[in-house]
Amino acid sequence: MVSVKITEEVLTAYLHCKYKAYLLLTGVVQESSEYEQWLQRHDQEYIAAATRVLLEREEALCLPSHTPLTSEHLTQGLTTILGAHVEDASCALAFHALQRVPGASSVGAFHYVPVLFGSTGQAVHETQKLLLACGTLVLERLQHVRPPSGIVISGDAYKARRVDLGAQQVKAQKILNDLTEYLQGQKKPRLWLNDPCRICRYQQQCKAEATQLDDLSLLRRMSEREIQLYNRKGIFTVRQLSYTFRFRKRSKRVNPTAPLLTRIIHQPKKSTREGTFWDQDACQNTPSQDHYGPQTSSSDGLGAGQIGLIVALGHNAPAQPSWSCYPLLCIWSQGGSRSSSQVGEEPHTG
Image 1 (cartoon, helix red, strand yellow):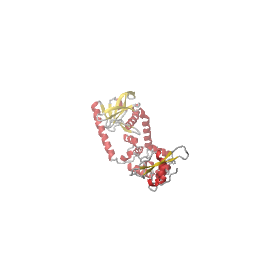
Image 2 (spheres, rainbow, N blue to C red; image 1 turned 30 degrees about the horizontal axis):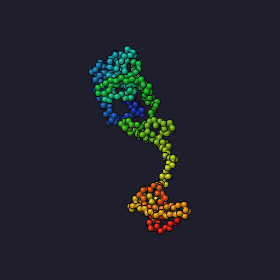
Image 3 (tube, helix red, strand yellow; image 1 turned 90 degrees about the vertical axis):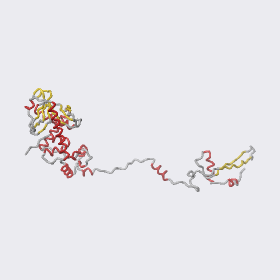
Image 4 (cartoon, rainbow, N blue to C red; image 1 turned 90 degrees about the horizontal axis):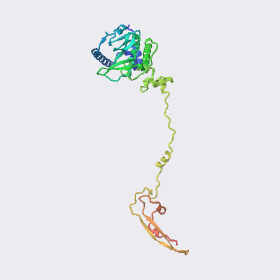
């Protein structure tokens, strides 16, 4: 029986899904999905092309496949070592290449840094940095010096970029510690369904397990951080989370103008015998005025005064009249429409 060890595939799986790395280390075998197989073929083609380019550019040693790298290989001082494979009790890590750089180590006045063949993309991703950082920790066991940087070769021109790995060293050490505990059966990561599950070979198995546990990760919109916050409150299942649901309370804030607007909108119209005064159409007949001769009065002997009356005849005014006509309107509205003859029959008081 072949012993399972930490490989590049396990490291890559851990960076996307810790539970997948655990399944790989525990020997759970599943056939790779079609998309995973396509990715593997694409990566192998790029690695082969980059290897040919490095062999043409400079002096390089290409080790046979699965040949463990030893200190004797490093002491030769070659500029580049291709296909390096480092293996110990827990790790079986394959390096795409190793590049010699100045700096004293146990193998001489130089040491080696890991080289990673990326892809046709130009940017260096965080996943690639963490893979290089894990490689520096493994190389430290051979040359007793931890490289502070690594090299990524990517793009169609196979351009090399030096990457500083100082910020990733602590996280890389935690990754190797977690994987070692998974391998020894001391720790088991929590199941969590995420986006990479759609192309994973363990998709059906993990979904069935999550359904049996009624796990919160079944709610795909919920992030891992939100699930951890609920777990701290003692909520681990979808059923437990459903008990926290409450209907939204109606707002107690009342608009002070709402009752007034309601009364104005629903207020019935005030009607008269001929309809509402102001809502009438513009009068069709031209309003006329009758003037009655003034009456003189001199009873007190102080002089004569003229008293006259002007009455507007017509049904309605086309617009609101000025306030100067208000007394006349009051007379008109109280007495209704009156003719000139009716007005003339009223007795005049002297």
